[in-house]
Length: 432
Ligand SMILES: *Cc1c(COP(=O)(O)O)cnc(C)c1O
Image (cartoon, rainbow, N blue to C red; front, side, top):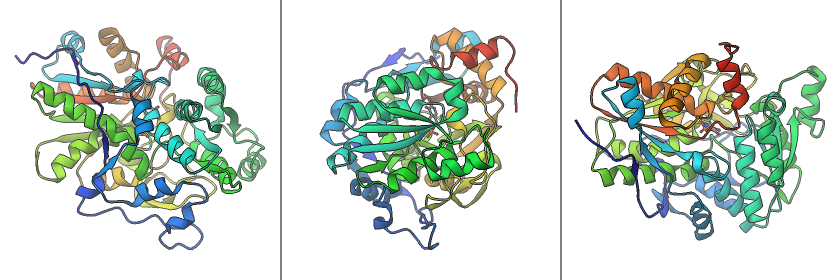
């Protein structure tokens, strides 16, 4: 039997991000301007994004240098550990070897600061004073609030109302970092007021919160908007995860057989898997299996349609070619708030369309069961989002029933999600 150390060390963080577009035969169809229906021009985006990020959105360069100030912030918690789940294997009697890349060691506790820090930096560089954004469960809001505090930017977060009420922990963290937070839909923007008129009890959704944040940024000159997932530049920044993991595996002399990540908008999945998928696209590796995992309550890849759609409820964002459940889809209030998004990153969508990656969906009770099994073996209580990857890793290990190497991205910890675990442990959690 193969033997692996628990923790795999490398000294250095990758110096460059990886752009998968350099290795794709076909690129996603271009984003369309919602007003004209024509492909969007870079200047259409400059009201809400800095030029450097718009450039990163369209470039097909394979490697993009991580700026030194961003690198120095990464050094606070990167490289993140790649851990061999020895106890899990033993406890569950698995033949497969499972590794997890643990992104929960960042200050806000998830992968999201990998892009939040980069986005705050580029906005600061271009003279922007304030950033607006949306947040679901609060992970993205806390990541951007953290990044804003590092680069001295004001941050305003529209938080999906149901999560604002259910998850005070993340709200308090966001406020502690010095950002302002508003439950969405709110009275502070036109799109928010419109929704409240139709439905004063609206639990909110990421689509609505995005509308509010984009609206405010578009109507203020010193304010930009920042998105935590979906867009190409966000996925690009997250590739630091997969690049590190690949180096860590290299130190062990192995190349993983199966990679797994949970998908909300697709950024942690993409960040973890794209450097490996690039190897496959360049025909350097053949047999890699890559699996995206989503909730049955918001089954974008497994049940959505592949089409142009808006990223938000008020139809303010460009139309993206992606798997979507419809821009007006309001997902049921499951506990994996970060996976409650109607769309999917165009790059992840196209790779799924072309059969390069697979997708599967799970109900939340089976996901929490796997999360607790993982915690009892490895000690870390996973974020409910990440727990989808845990569940798939365990299931696939059983299905394959062979000494393959499975690696999943543990995108964050669940220590702000204790009320969800409480509900599960009391038997009160329901599938929707
Ligand atoms: C936000 C979040 C996700 C989902 O977003 P992606 O863009 O799909 O990665 C997954 N896991 C955690 C811990 C998150 O915070």
